[in-house]
Amino acid sequence: MKAKTAIVGRAENIMCFKAAGVEAFPVTDEKGARETLRKVARDHPVVFLAEEYAEPLRDLLKRFDEEAYPVVLPIPAGGDTGYGEAFLKEAMERALGVDILFRK
Amino acid sequence: MARLNVNPTRMELKKLKARLSTAQRGHKLLKDKSDEMVRRFTVLLREDKRLRDEAEGALSAAMKQFALAGALTPSYVQETALAMPSVAVEAELGTESIMGVEVPAIRLSAPEKSDAVLPYAFSEMTSEADESVREIAALLPTLMRLAEVEKAVRLLAVEIERNKRRVNALEYVMIPQLEETIKYIRDKLDENERAALVRLMKVKPGGM
Image (cartoon, rainbow over all chains, first blue to last red; front, side, top):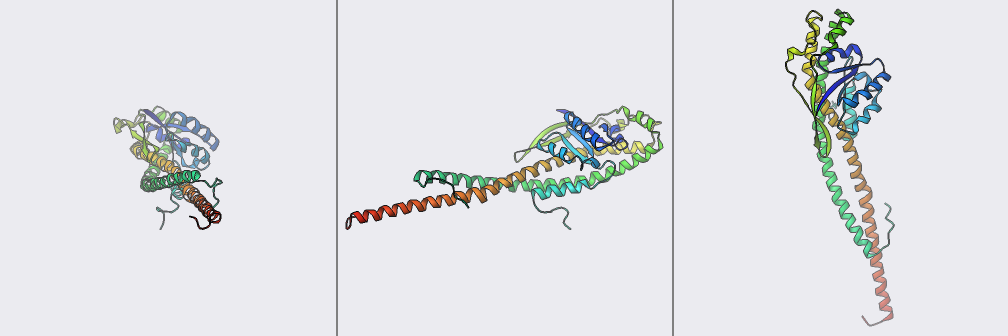
């Protein structure tokens, strides 16, 4: 199966992805991001999401976790929010109960 | 632990014994499954961390550069320049099974040529923009892999949690309950036997 990829985020941050061949869907606020993501996820199995929207849309992202597709990947497009680390920590705690990565 | 509400009969005892052995076998299997899933999970987790560190560093550098480049070009020029991308990222999607959990397996179809990436004329955008677009295009395989791994981590975490619950339910509820009930029935049957024996001795003294 061939499929397209998409990115959802602020216009100024995602334009360079557009040039690289990823379909870009600019949004301006959280509500727009929610609607756009829902629509985009229907026909794009791989969607990148600007990290700033990952936290407010957590409930929506959870729903994608039931199936293998669509894959929604929060990436730091326009500002790192520490999402990556938080995500790893949470997954680790849920599954293992111990911290094996960030332990100093 | 509460014992099950059953009649203390031999029939019931036999049934419960069968259930207990099934439960114990199931518990062992699930526990093995859990161990293996955790092992796979830790491998994936480390890979996810490595990819994320790699991608985040490169990405923010490229974005910064693009932002700088964007500042030098009027936004309407930029928009028209980027409006029609010359390449489309396409991926082959499949699924893979990790211990019965379906996870995505993404193969990125290779873009024809990295030079062909730029969708605009050299005069329209600055060379900084070229550079950042190229960098991001080069980063896409990493991002795809990250998408794949991170999804697998999510799915596996959920499954591990579920499995743990099952194992615990068997270990701490089901199996003790069955064991206790079996013991109860055994005691009861033994008691009945002794009672019958004593009764016999009473009605038939010296016999036996």
